[in-house]
Image 1 (cartoon, one colour):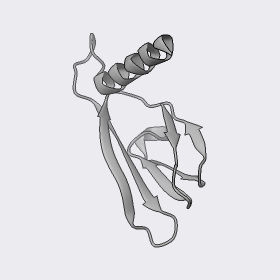
Image 2: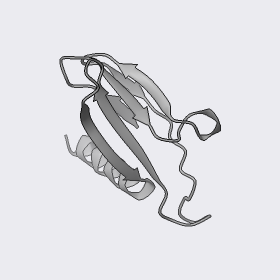
Image 3: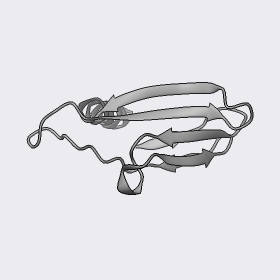
Image 4: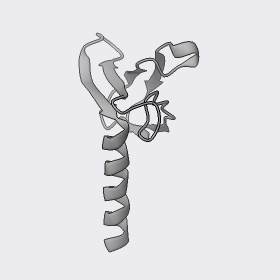
Length: 91
């Protein structure tokens, strides 16, 4: 998954429970910057059970106001990646 900051200011991104030992992974993403994230889903389909989600929050670097907060499931991400590949194939 790619995290892209399309804002004109830096943001602080928190990937809940995705760091070492299950801690939150917190990083600064500058204006118009992008970085790759490797999420760990604990309940994958065909295994332990479905339903695991990763939550991503972005707050303004100055003022700490909440700008974005969303939880993503493994199935949602897999589906969106498939749609992206289909769109690239048709272009």
